[in-house]
Image (cartoon, rainbow, N blue to C red; front, side, top):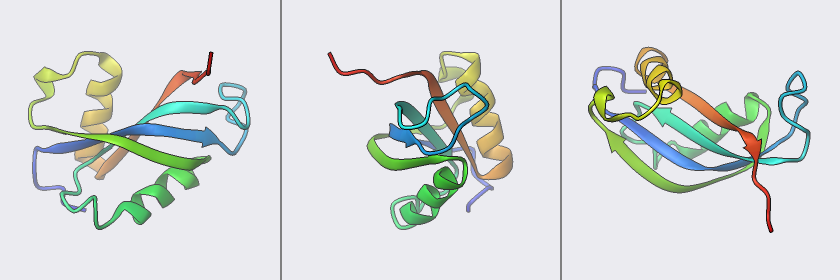
Amino acid sequence: MNKSTNTVYVLSGYAKCSATQKGKYKLGNKHSIGLLTTDENYQDNINQLKTFIRDLGWDSIMFCMVEEVDDINTLSNDVLISSFVRAQKNGQSLVVNDHPITVH
C-alpha cells in the first residue's frame, strides 16, 4: 500500500453482511459501502482489497464508482473525514451505511 501520498481513492459500491455484527447489521442484508484506500494501484490489487472487506464480515462485494480525493476539506461529513484519516494512517478504511439497501 502506498501511504506516502495525500490522495485517497474512494471505491463505492455494496456488500452483503456475512457475519452477525453485534446486532447492527442483519445477516444477509446488503448495505452501501465505501472503501477508502491510499493504494494508487487499487485496480491491480482489487482482490486484496476485497479480502480486507471479507475479513470484516462482508461478501458479494461490488464496486460501482471510484473517486479520487486529495483534499480532506472536500468531504461532506464526519464519518467520511474520520475514514479518510484512518485510510491515510492505515492504508485503507471501510465505511458501511447503517441502513440496508431495499428494492421497491
